[in-house]
Figure 1 (cartoon, rainbow, N blue to C red):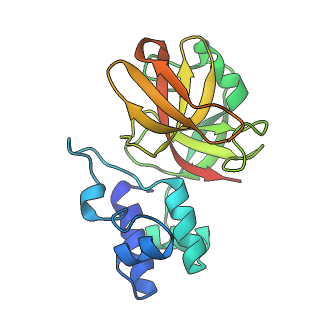
Figure 2 (cartoon, rainbow, N blue to C red; figure 1 turned 180 degrees about the vertical axis):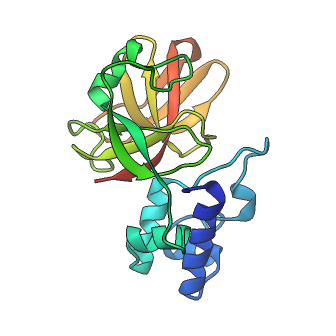
Length: 210
């Protein structure tokens, strides 16, 4: 199972394998030294916080490890459970009929499926990127694994659907009772501030794969 505890344990194990603490690994990867602190792994309310896709990609690049190496640290026994995750194109996700009030896939036609490691308690689905509006971070054809139930904080990558059917992937700048402030992932596109009443759902990007 791709659980919260096992993913963080894999980061600790990767750091130890290269003779570093988690803080040292974060610094080597160009991240804030506190990025992997124990206190950052849960929210003040006690909800699980997952490491971002970008932070994992950076520590893999910094250590020369592959994604397969990392997954073997997540599940040393090699018995990582997998499951079928609902999949749809990002451009098609604007249809309100495809989602329920929680921002989760609704039953009915329109969804495909992909095989992916099990995220445990987090409810996830997959979106396939089309076009270059999110390049260079996310490119055409890349698959984003997202969760509307995962906790979010400033700097997280998120996918947002508005009540008008617009779907976008941005970086979370600030979320209040009145507005959702988003930073663009592409310099050619503007940052956005969306009134809270116009937000249908927000899902955190948990993983990205080519």
